[in-house]
Amino acid sequence: MSDINKLTTPEADEEVFELPLDPIWRQAARDAVNEYSYGDIIPKEWINAHLNIRFSDKPMTAAQHQSLAFEMLSKIDGWRDELLRKHCRYTVNIRGVGYKIIEPPHQTAAAMTKMQKELRRSISQAMTALVNVNERALSLEDARENADARAKLGAFATLHLKQLERKAKEAEEE
Image 1 (cartoon, one colour):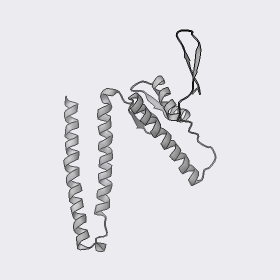
Image 2: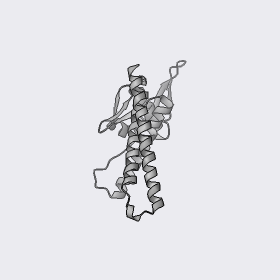
Image 3: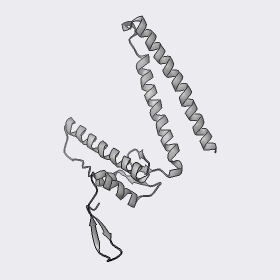
Image 4: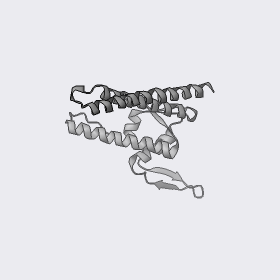
């Protein structure tokens, strides 16, 4: 990764230097767009180098590890957001490998698949919390509220997730 981008002007064929973008993920997004195309996988090593994410060979304390994880997440989220909003490049994580740039015709399906997965996970976590309540510690009113919440969540999950799945199948058939 170069710190300075060289440009030439057509009039004088002179080199003009452009300062790197700040924050760092804006420059990394521009570099990714210049180096990778739709359908390509951007390797995690490339991402770490361009986002200046450094891993230490030395043992870290829990606080240092947490700080590095937060920095990494912050930079990668900023980079992915910049790619999507400024360059129309939707990326999905390929665990342990990097991020794939989704082709535009497949972007809708990828976004819906991600949303359905996250929605299922959230519904499952909420239902687990609602079902695993110490009922002996609940008042009659609290128990009714819990039962009502479970019924609403169950109905929501059945109605909306099935509807989303149906629409996804219909879209695939078209």
